[in-house]
Length: 184
Image 1 (cartoon, rainbow, N blue to C red):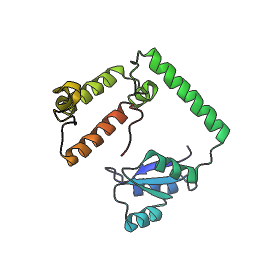
Image 2: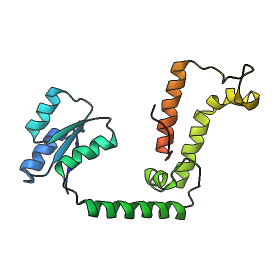
Image 3: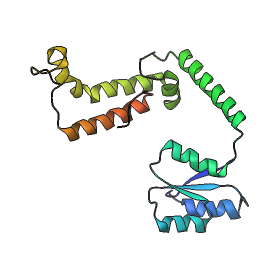
């Protein structure tokens, strides 16, 4: 084991006490422990350090932030990492193809398969939910020839509603393996 990602808020034994036990009872004083918490305050940093944790990450966090934090504590051989990543990507693509994942433009089948644990039925259910949840966004465009209103413009929607819908679409599509969606 190279690093421990420790949730601070756990029932029965919280992350601080669990880390103290890792350090004392197990004697793993050099093992990096990274706290995961929704409350990133100076006090939380102090409690984490007092418990023997090496770092604190606030939830939710971006995957790149987590990777950067882990890399501060774990040395990675770049050649071995590249070989492992290539092998994993190849295996993911082969597994997705073998499981009959549909080829849909804009969706990375291997990524979707990995995110869904290889469950094709879950993927189909997510796509159906995506279509159901966002059917109202397509209706105004579908009601007019060419998807435009009589003045030649896309039907107006309140700006806040559009932003909210855009965030929902990106989140849902991201979970389903959608590729190329802007985060703006």
